[in-house]
Every structure is written in C-alpha cells, then in structure tokens.
Length: 420
Image 1 (cartoon, rainbow, N blue to C red):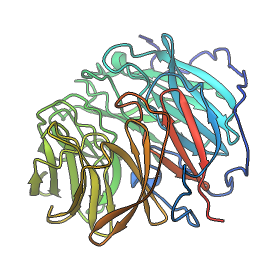
Image 2 (cartoon, rainbow, N blue to C red):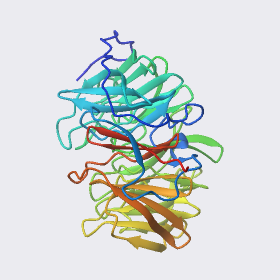
Image 3 (cartoon, rainbow, N blue to C red):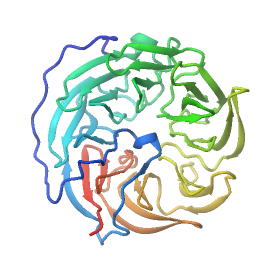
Image 4 (cartoon, rainbow, N blue to C red):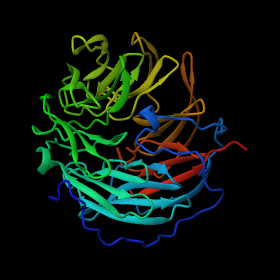
C-alpha cells in the first residue's frame, strides 16, 4: 500500500492515450448540467433535468457511444466541466479516468493498488469540486487531481495517518467535499471520521469519539436544527458529526445481521431513513441533538435495502428489499412505513430520478423506466443491456445533460434521452 501522507505527490506520467469510441448525435449540455458527486448535488439522487422522454422506443433510447476501457470495478460517473469521471482497476493498479463528452479518454492516472480480494474492482466514484477531482482507493489512498489535466495534487494514506479499518469489501466510500473540506471515514482509532483541506490534504479535524469502524456507506451533509452535519453509517451505528468541528452530535445503534451498512441515508424534515441487507431491515429515526441520540419511528425487517439506493418522492419511499427469500422493489409511506406497493418482477435495481421518472438498472442488465404514482409505480419502458453475472451492474444510473449513463464492468454507455 502507498505511504505518502499530507504532502503533495511527485507528478507521475500522465497517460494521454486517446481510445476511440463510437459517437453520434449531439453533445451533452455543457452550460449548467453537472453531476459532480455520487448521487448528485446534495446526494438526493434526483436530477434537475427536464424535457426527457416519457417513454422509450422499443429497444431503448438511442445509444450515443460506449467506452469499453473503464477497467474492472463498480465506480459510477460524475460529470463537470464538460468531462466525465470514473475509476477502474487495470491488473494490479487502480486508475482514475476522465472522458470527454464524446466518450474519448482525456486522461488516466493511477491511484494506488487494486483491490483483489472479495468482489475485486474499483468502488468509489470520483468527486468533483472547484477544478479538482477526489477519489478514495479501496485500500485507503485518498488522492486529488487537477480535473482538466489529471495532474496529481496531493495524496493521503488513511491507514498510515488514521489507522484506517475496513471490512470484507474494503473502503467503498464516495467522499464528500463540503466547502474547503474533504470529508471521509477511515474508521480508525486515530480518526473515525476526518476532514482534510481540499487544497492540500492537511488534516483539519479527526473525530475519535465514535467507537466503530468504517462500513461501506457514503454519507450526506444536511442542515438540521441549525447545524451543518454529516450523517453516515458505521459498522454498528448511525452517527452525525458537526462539519465544522468534527464533534459527535448524535448517534444510535444500527447493528446489521450482515456487516453491510452501505445505503446512503435519506433525510427529510428531521427524519432519517437507514437500512441494511439480509433481513437487517429498514428504519426511520428522529434525531435529537439535546439527548444526542435518535428515536425509532418505525422498523421493518423486510425493507432491507442494501446498496441499491433509496428515493423519497412526494412522501413515498422507493428502494429494493434484497432479503434472501426474494427481492422486491418497494414503495412505502415515508413517515409510517406502511406498504403502498411491492413488485418482485424488477429484481435488484440501482435507481435515480429525473423529470418525473425513476430510472432503475437491474444488477444483471435490464434497464427500467418507472412512473411513480400515488399508489406506487408503473413500469413504462424497459430495454436490455448485455446480460452479465449477478451484481455486475452495481453502479447507479446517472441522468445529466439529456443523457442516461450506465456502467457495467469495463463498459460505460451513454444514451440520448431527450424528448424530441
């Protein structure tokens, strides 16, 4: 594992080999359409796109291009400055990649050793902020790059600095940039959650109050009771820390039956939904800063969403229950947990939302377009990607600039989904 800490790394050879990709049709809007982070602005997993197809033609929307050299892994895409960022493993090395809007490689830079144990491959999606891209390697190398050129800016070894501790599937967090801070969870005794200066990688604060190691959760930053705070999951709890100071604000036990705490929490109006797979269940909690804990509003064992993502739309919560006995796409009332609709025909899907539709990608390669309704949802359209083994398509779909982006293995596909 790499050992540089809190210092600018020596620039390495910038790989500029441009790989051809099939390309046709218009470029994505470069004016205001960006998806700079995992699950987009605010990690709500909702695109602001308008004017999209209400249903797809037979066979799916028009494909613009496929880039087939993303490497091995599960990283999604972020989009900013007219560029697309992702990551993948190439033999024994993990790489961060930048493509132009025509699906051609602009730069490719290494970020430490590849993860070769359970479920090998890249995990994290690069995060963009103010001209730089930030990416966490599964073994704990957190690095920053110039977005335009790929020039390395700094790198920090979270294991050397904070005794990073991770589980069976390595560090899988998509880091957050909040103001001048890069927020991440090494999970180590010298830094359970930490904030690094986004310009230099210097440690700004390190929380050691939290007792549990890192899970696989990518948290979110919200303002609650006047405090800007990061909410995330450890291996055995849900926690919140003050973004400015790193102080623990509140926590509550959330001990899964399988050590998979991965789902990004859903926050709305002071309530937080959390879940974990393999019959650990889904739970709505109400945090209280005075008592520094959280009250359980409801808990349902069968709503065991793992890492498919959960969406809140008009008071209704959508996601995938993935218990061993069967997988259901669910719609429940957010505040009560009452079932509105269950559907076992979609399988395990990763989701996003745009222009009144839910986009749901099955983990073996079927893409669905869903219409959320007051009584649940309707399947509007679907098409097939290349059929692959279960859990190949773990990266969540992204809608940005009139396009739908789908990652499966080393392939990244771009589709034109604008209404004519």
